[in-house]
Length: 137
Image (cartoon, rainbow, N blue to C red):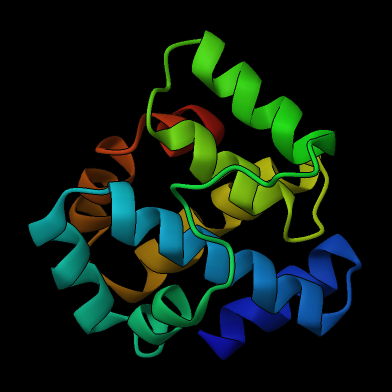
């Protein structure tokens, strides 16, 4: 996972700590909202993914109290029918990335993960999470 964190930091021009927080929040959202069997299979094949999800301070089910872009994304997600994923998007936003950067990171993750594991597994996981399915391009 460190390889992916480094790619995020480099491509998005953010500090490694911000990239690590954002990737952790993404892994947390995947763990909480994705198809449980597929997520378990994916995380077993991506060393460090489960640890990042577990260690993430950005709980996917909780929107940040401060509002801001996180609250805006969470509210928008709820309005467009993303249901339980709204809090996860808010958690991603509170990691320090902007809205456009979050979409870029999700797309980067899909591409990176498909280079490491069976692309069908990645598609199954991402497809089981409406908020990520809509962000991944």
